[in-house]
Image (cartoon, rainbow, N blue to C red; front, side, top):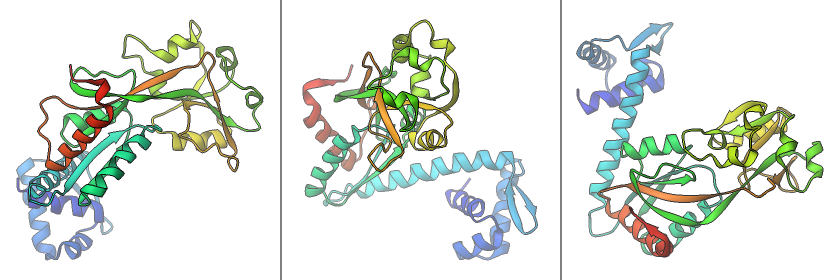
Length: 302
């Protein structure tokens, strides 16, 4: 299977037609059609359904698209790593993480590195812990920022000297908005929109479940989410109250939403992680040294 043909396949999937893809790739339609037919024969699966001048992916085609995108990303990353070995330090650093205010500290490191290495580019990927660690394990990310509790056994990591505060995002006209803080009893009889991080049961310790106590299973969870932007829209439309972290949803004076912390106070620590025995590009190694210098007093790589 040729890498070039995978790029052809992805272009057809994106454009939705042989004609559009051929024009984009500057190849003839017969040539492109033949390449795709050879690819289907090689895999022994039908990848496309042609309908009304449109190309629709089969289930097998959608699987190949996902894997082909990963392969193309990996090749692009590899090419960038080799190009960064030139005398002028350049290249790409790939960082994944959930929504957290600690990104300000990462942004400060990036800003300082830019002064010395302006040719390094940074690529941010937003997702929950499962999304980030999957891409880390596949080599598609160099670093991940994980909110505790998280499984760190496969990674080297640094503890970041910051805490995220858990609380409830609600409309300013909600009854609970009159309170300065939210207790467990306040959440028993209201519809909740919960972060999957808060609901996760795969660890021996779930801090939110422990905070809530024996009535945790009685919560009326109507929606779960992994990123807070859409959860905030749900709250604005009156779907429920969102259990999330502070400072990742707009609760300023011009917003219809407000944040109230949990009481007793519940906080989560954070880690920046990378694969053990990782061989970094020159650019990623510069970033690693920068975060170690900033957080060196709490370094751990057990």
